[in-house]
Image (cartoon, one colour):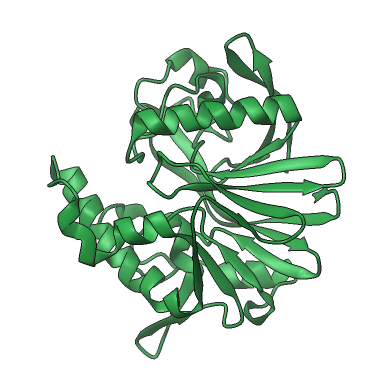
Length: 295
């Protein structure tokens, strides 16, 4: 896609069925899932279908990556599906015309395992930055929240699933965040990447979760990370995903972002929609509707 003067390319790391739809977006109405295409759910199993992908932006002569997926060779007990994943992601990136040394900026919309994995790669038994010339933009609130030194500030896990998530977050920080902090810029509130791109805080999914706004000429887009896991959250934005640290705040943030997208005709670009992965949204009374698809 071209959005104004910015070229946008999608590079998929993984795509498929992950878990029951009712698990991914708890409480979401079954009739809304039934209206989705097979890109987003499997009607035979009731399973949620999604993608792990990176958006490559070429803006003002620089290469910007938005989120970096799961990564290879990682221990991920919190989600066995992606434990020690092995994909040709870097080859796919090369097919899109991007070598690791070409990347100027890496945007992590938030610190979850499937958004920071290719920040690094394993070389000679050590995790090193995968993109040696890049500046890594990481929300400060997430860096503080997930830093193992601050683990005592968080409430004790309520169940085994949450315990695994906590254990997994320590591994993610160790292999995908700590090795790039020397090349990172920690930002708060709002951060201008360049003339076309601006990061803004969008808390709820994680304390530091963010959106990247693209404005070039008369064209607009917003890369929303995990504010949306499924199109049902456009149609019923009050339903947060099971991965949200603060579901109520995430729902309020999601509604605010969708309102602006509908009013200003911003193309909504989530992290995990499979197939055509970007949505044009419009208001539908107190909710929203999908006017069309792109990407």
